[in-house]
Amino acid sequence: MPLVRGSCCLRSRKLNPRGKNPPASAGGEVNAGASRQAPDILAQSRDAESQYVEWKRKVRAGLKRLQDSYVQLYRSTELFRVYSSTIVPGFLQTEGYAAAVLGMSARFHELPVDDSAEAARARVERSRIIHEPGHRFVLLIEESVLRYQIGDADAMAGQLGYLLTAGALPAVSVGIIPMATRERAQWPEETFHVYDDTLASVELVSARVKLTQPSEVALYLKTFEQLRGMAVYGAEARALILKAIEALH
Image (cartoon, rainbow, N blue to C red; front, side, top):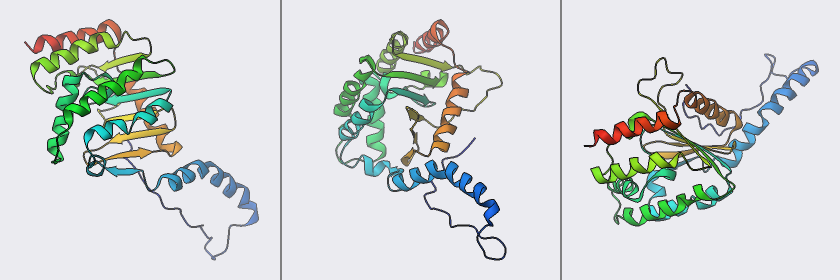
């Protein structure tokens, strides 16, 4: 499974052993290779400065501003693919669950002002996009996400209850990968988002990494499809959620 790669340096032209340029007969092959690499090279050059952004820089102005900073990207995206092995995706978070998630972030980053409650309201407001026309959402979570208790029991119960109905939304597909899945095609991965087919965003402990190289985005799309093939939907997914709700009591 590929790790995040963020190389942003252009390679120098290769010379043959005698220090000369490749012979004319090889020119077609060289040009063809350069043509295939051109989209990746352009993406590297364009986004070298913004590919890797540390969370401590992103949250410096507050968690609410961080939530608001994604609105433009969401508005311009038609197809969202989200995989999470850790928490319920932000699009489906209730306010109580979101407040617990963002509160942990505020404490972890030792923010001087904890605006997690305000940020949670902004996240829920931002997520109303799932009800708007022109967008589709394919969301995958590991079953273990249903069992990680984020916030108190009431917050978890409210979140799991909302998940029971979210999959019925016309533009939303919610898949759950069961813990009992045999012979997995992929192990649980880091949380990542793919926006249309042009941008992959990977969430690490220290930073958010944005990938726009077509070859790297393609790897995340391939990974997503393999994970999606292991997920259950509809009645099977609801049964897993109901088991998690029962385990709260």
